[in-house]
Image (cartoon, rainbow, N blue to C red; front, top):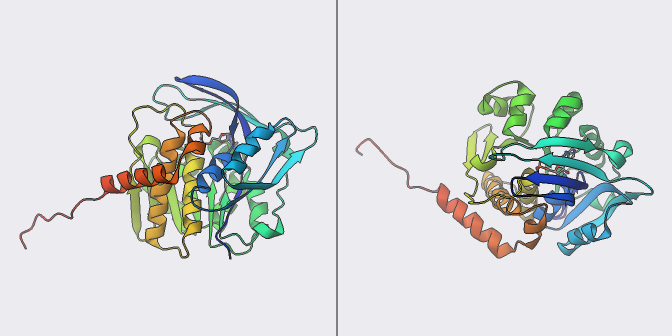
Length: 310
Ligand code: AMP
């Protein structure tokens, strides 16, 4: 077993719109955000597909971060996956304008032999049927994480439930968790997820932080308070990538390591939202990341208090 992360997910050209601007054809996709974030802590192998229209410089940007892109398939004459989304008002939820699966419609992920022993596998947001195909190919990773979105909850629920039963950690945002279990209670959704056999259920609450449920209780991290968020796209993928990279870097997986991974993921996500696409995340240094991790852990610590006299 090595210390590498395998990430399989979407590689996209995004059309983004927020109250702070607009960008067309921006580098996006769950695997791109995830791999840049994971590369802050561990070596990363990415598997995905693009069309011939995907600009070579986009893949170069991933390589500059040390991401191994040899597993990215390019379909001759094909068109890259495209997503158009908008955030309005307080930007707490993305409004999807279009999802063009394009080359993802006929994609069958083939995991190169040399990635099959990677320590951590992050099944980033893609069709859950493809996520199942990846699970068939990997060899007992230390930890398997899975992310998804409302699109797949609505269109591929059964396959998604099967994936959840087979992974260690499931990540959902609050709206998705409520939708998946038809409840308004996040602890209820967390309990339902754990009942499906997960080790941890992580529910992302945007600017309100992250909740991680285990059978023994829960852990909670605030989001970094930011005066200006320009584009929340990819925050979830970035969180998950940072989490995966941190876990891969550690020899063993303990409750402390998982909690630290939540903090690292939250710090990484706080950078990506400061600018459009992956731009800010690409520029982040380990020093900056560590500083924000420290600010978050300081904000979370308090002396235990007692009301009863001893
Ligand atoms: P996030 O904001 O973390 O949920 O992720 C945003 C990224 O997800 C964007 O860059 C999109 O290209 C990508 N995306 C949007 N819809 C889908 C989908 N149905 N499957 C896979 N990736 C998607």
